[in-house]
Amino acid sequence: MPPKIRYSRESIIEAAFEVVRADGEEHLNARTVARRLGCSTQPVLYHFADMKELKKEVCVRADDFHTEYITRISGTVKDMMLNIGIRYIRFAVEEKHLFRMLFQSDYMEGNMLTDLIGSEEQSPVVQLLMESLHLSAAESKQVFLLVLMFAHGFASTYADNDLPFDETFVQQQLKLSVQGALLAVKNQNLPR
Image 1 (cartoon, rainbow, N blue to C red):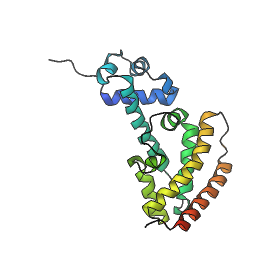
Image 2 (tube, rainbow, N blue to C red):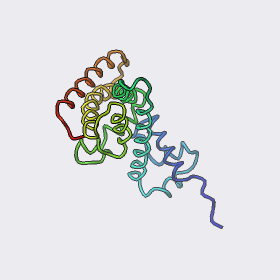
Image 3 (cartoon, helix red, strand yellow):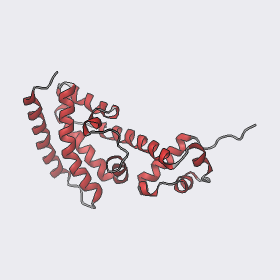
Image 4 (cartoon, one colour):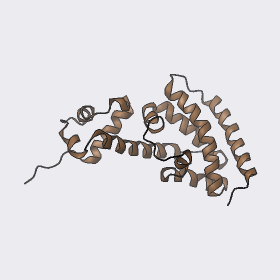
């Protein structure tokens, strides 16, 4: 009878995700994952051919976590994009290591920035914008891209520096960005 597998692929991915979340991608290796699981490196190496494969899985897990984080919003429909922008920046403040892995490394797939907006992972955000702001898919993607680039600048600054998070200031700046993006998109007459 073969030995019972005590550490599943999913449990290893979760442990690796927690290593990155706590200490950063640069600390992700078979030993740190095994230490978090309380086992030898053998289960990690059994389930993954190499660390590149595990890092890719951790990135998928981090992306799912990020999408769930930024779409867990409250407030009025009018403030939907503003709330998404604030959550995106707050994610960089609260989850610096995950933010860096997702948005400041080579794990992002696609050849162009528009691939990010059109990705399956971003479809819940685009769908929220379509419903809440009564925009077409093309308009929603354009607003999302404009506000994302603005929010990303703030988020990167917070993720890379030890600055106090001034939510009031950031919110004021994001409001201007959202208003500008909506005006710009409405004046472009994108297809419905």
